[in-house]
Length: 172
Image (tube, rainbow, N blue to C red; front, top):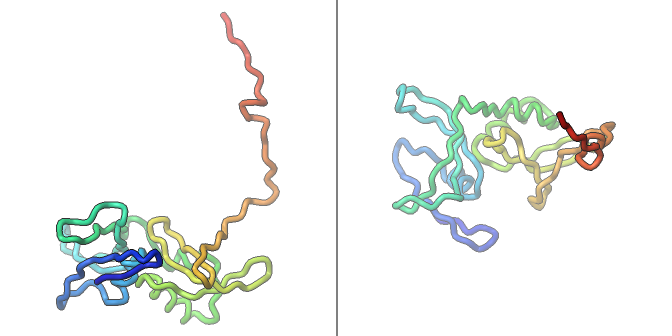
């Protein structure tokens, strides 16, 4: 599959086609666009089926067959999409929409969400980031929204800065 990104660069990866196909066409596009996808795979160590999030590692050179290496985030890495959504304080009109959003995020989709800030309901686009165990929020033009605010009421304490500490000589 070949995808052309915003910078007019072609990104390609060969996805195997079989009855045990791991990825749908939509999931393949999501991977090529840099998002992660939750899959079920058989762990060769214990022959049990386990969930894991995978995404392409675009920082490493491709394999001999021209494919990207995967970054894997297994169950023990601690990625729980439902908890991440819960902690994000997103607003949902009903519980069914919340469940559908969680499933969609796990497939690597960009999901329309709402959140409250300064007594205003703001619409945004959300993408799951399993590596950092959080959601990335974007505006309608896919510009990243910074929801990190400095804690109020904490004045900067410079009393321990190196410039404010008198040097004392210790002689015996």
